[in-house]
Length: 532
Image 1: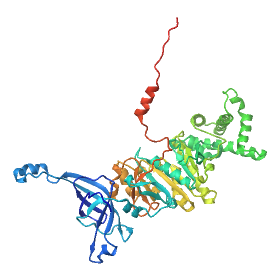
Image 2 (image 1 turned 180 degrees about the vertical axis):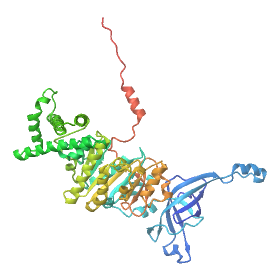
Image 3 (image 1 turned 45 degrees about the vertical axis):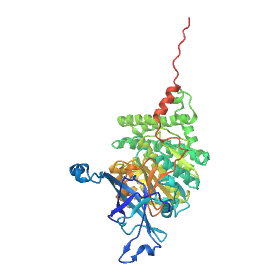
Image 4 (image 1 turned 90 degrees about the vertical axis):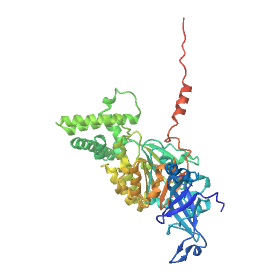
């Protein structure tokens, strides 16, 4: 088969999944190897003959040690008795056996690999026989090592059981999201990315910029339930009286706008314009010239302040606090009164990037909750086809210590959405912080490099079939390489070099020294002139 040599030999197998290899040098973690052997069974005879010849096992290097075969201190003690033999170095390498091939079929390993079995580099043929059964779907990358060119494809149909992408900062999470979002939309999927950091300015791989729409996440008070708006403006748990007063004031304004809209047959925005011109135009007259929407937003602020004072009556301290919060909110929050909900822009074959980077954490939670509820409702009523929702920084929304309604909305989406074509992709750099009630719904996985033991233990608990011996490779994975598991891949976990998305211009760790050097080169020395 053209093998380039033998890495070492099996010295013992503790189970059908784990073998220990002795070699003269350690093997790199995450490397694929293969082993050819025969198994003699008292039950079924020489199994290798029944399978059409020798059996082949595909394994991954999961751990390694390196030591003197005989300690130097012992060699010194032996002195002349050692016979001048130089002490050899020996590596004990642990293999995680992924699958065995017998009779042309890949199966989970059933027998421990016999001692003295040689260990060789994995061939492209063996890798293809284990992982090449699915030829359609969406390409994710190449099996490691990339030089063998064995393509890995995943089945988008299985995303109905959702996906978790976990990895440390800089390990390649956002690149993985970019690859999946681009290629899923290229085959017709509507993809929504809730972009927490504003890093998904994508140019699709096919160059069709019309497939990407970036929408700024802004809050529209006219399209939000008054109690939710009050909770966004006044998030402090102890400020219940303030929230009740503010919600009541907003309800009064919305009721008046609806009545005016119904009476004159005009939109809510036009009704707001009439109400602002009638009641607070003189208040805004001295303000600097602004666009029409900004004027309406300021007018709504004044209407809300006036209504809060009217509703609050004699509770001056409560009213003053509400007014202070309202004015602060309208001053610093991205708002709109004319914009539609982001969900109205969802369409097949397109990526909708909802940029929430300008919102505070609490505001992001409320905006995402509204979006998730809206998407689930449209899925249930048939007004929206199967949709992929990507949630970045998942612990902010489904963290174990998060007591916000967005967590319940995402849990319901994960539980009920799969029946109607809703696919959730949760992205996290701190999987140990995720709520188990939500992540238990996620059945597909991409695990990039993580170094914290708590995170590695967490992903082992989340992915029941992630063996501890395979999980040991996670801290040593280079950037962009991942353990991929789940039904969307097939029966066997794979170590994959995720393709690099060249159209993703933001999000990668910046080359600081290059940036500083260019900045210094562009800096002009000050010039002075003397005028007499």
